[in-house]
Amino acid sequence: MINSTLCYLERGEEYLMLHRVKKKNDVNHDKWIGVGGKFQEGESPEDCILRETWEETGLTLTDYRYRGLVTFVSDEAPTEYMHLFTAVGWTGTPHPCDEGELAWIKKAQLLALPMWEGDRIFLKLLEENAPFFSLKLCYQGEHLAEAVLNGTRIV
Image (cartoon, rainbow, N blue to C red; front, side):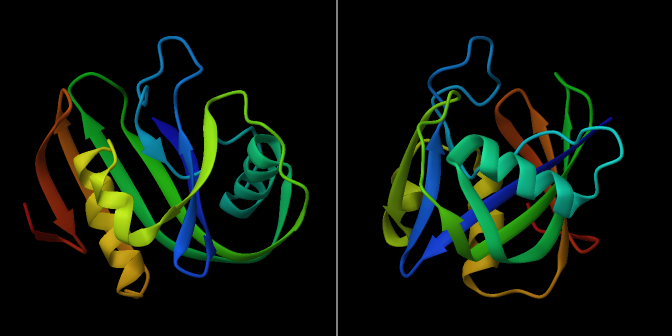
């Protein structure tokens, strides 16, 4: 079982996205995702997202919100609990990321990018400003086999 975080930094009608193209054997290779990563021992979700955002971008979050818990179940990997955040405030100067290329992408263009099917579901929830949610995404390989939102199957 893995605990991780993911954050979408929001600047007007854009999100800061990470195009995962630099790491070998990356389950997210060539996909566009937010920034974040795995918990270290003793970290809370907030500790992790602050550290991971700084490591990947050089930015220190000053205004962020815990938006939901996404449970990934896969036939190819251990179950992962991803703590999802958005941020509208930060300080610092961005630096290159060793995991991929960072880019500000217009929200209206996001869904045209290569990404996991389930990411489209939680991005829509973020855009709708949904209250805190629990989303379970079940994958068979790269295919989304089932999605359950707050206990109700939606896919």
